[in-house]
Image (cartoon, one colour):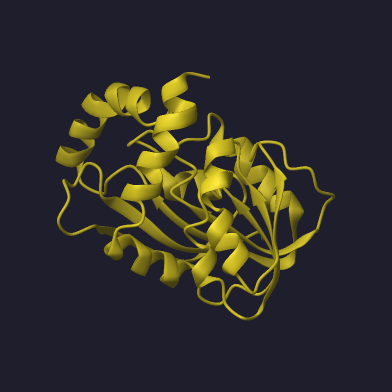
Length: 205
């Protein structure tokens, strides 16, 4: 892994993804999380302050060592136990039916095989469990999509493999999830090609 990906990019993400508008969205997506939760793409723990009181513990999946170090203060201040439990969302180290809920925020766009990650999440969710997701991806409007396709090679190089063209809804349904809630919108104040978001919940059938 390049020095940039190991030592620079996690700091950039920790800063940019802590903007007030994004923290408000993190709070929304964490609403109603309960029980035992697996969070893929834990990053620097920016969701930790928004875990509801009903969460008993969180198993954090995060490959970046620096991301985990940057999360240390948030984890220490949390009333919810958080344990780093794996490095790869495509291969979760848990038995079937282990968790009541899963959480993914701006993660699927960077996973090399998001279909494998979603199948793993579905596998480890207990019957009735819910995936809470907040992702950026393929825009709802074709003119914006054209820009996303043009800029994807640059985005992937500069942002650790992140893709603007992640088809969120289609990826969830193809992995066997039933979407129970979804809101697709553009983040105000940023270019549409980077701020096309999908926020919602999905469950295995």
